[in-house]
Image (cartoon, rainbow, N blue to C red; front, side, top):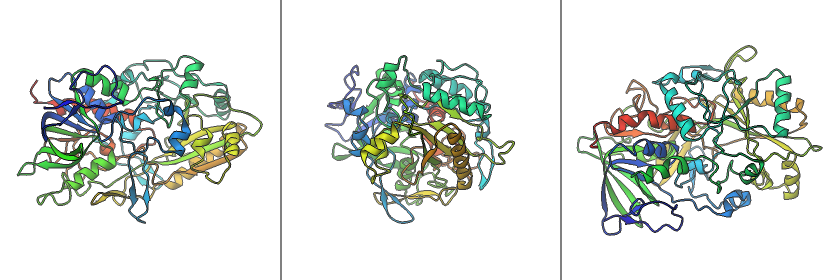
Length: 527
């Protein structure tokens, strides 16, 4: 029988049996199997915690230890202390790369900057861009809006309505007031306003009250947070779900889904667990392993009846892979130090949608958490650490994001155990125009030295689109409830379903959609 798994990093307060291990059997049954414990899988588990159904979350990694090294960027960026995703491969060149993916309870949210914006109303409809068009979603902003509000409360989001002209309607205010700008960021905001722009306080799930709190979480954008002040999937949805009866298996990698003889249902999952293969029988399956791993699992689960992957009658499984065009942008004033501790409080969407002087959407500006020398070293390995310390102590650090448009040629493939990514960025001209405009703005704000680096194939924390949702089974993988058109008891609860990538952080939308589809997943199960 399953019993408590001996994990030295097991959070306190979990009942015996909540974290399960198959010590004397190779088989377990559940009503709902959720594969992945990040923003989508964790939130779905939370939504189903009181359904009466047996819910089992399977996580490839373990519980990330809370330790002093969490907040030390040299451990994260120079020593790779928490990297555990192995290698993926560039499908064009065959070259390996370390992806921006992490296998821990809570998924990539353990390392995110807690920026939780809503997508704009325009993100849900077809939009003309400079190099193509986006796909319309099979549901609208209004359909998702109540769930956005619920997730904002669940994750303690701090924000302010009315500053950003692109902000869509809210049925309820943000649960907490916005995080105030520190002096350097406030001066930048003043300069932007004097240039006729509309800087706003970004929605942020960071519960800091004092400057001492900000000091404690300075590295929480990019590093784990050992204070508990950052709202992420583990502390806000996974652990509450586990305390309400959901179970979890950690250090367990699902390798294949097994189907019924007619191919219409998933009946079980095979997984590697404690060095052997086990079987997890399930009535319903929700995949939330991330847009790449979810697609790869379905491709590897091909059968004689479905030789190109489960649920792939449209031929779109793995295709339309999107990750955003993104640039790390650093402005430096050698004569002015930046003492900001939590810099990620300001955003600009003046160029997010087409308008006067902007014929096509360009994208979003948001601040990065305050960069430190070890964070810069991997990108500038030739630079002396002392020079990087001087630079980062006087820098204003910005993240620029433009929409990556869907393309059938951008895709996930599998070659045995290897994951191959075919990706050629789209909509690059618009992104370059965004960088050009921001360069001008930042120099006017008093930062004459500009350093920038456009991110490549390995920067894929915003990956989406590999199993697009739509109404037509011939042109999509999932229906509007994110259930497979082909497999009647299979849902995808991560960003795989996104028909378009928008140009904003996807985490809030992933979580809101998980709440939206939860009733569909639970419908008809025993209670």
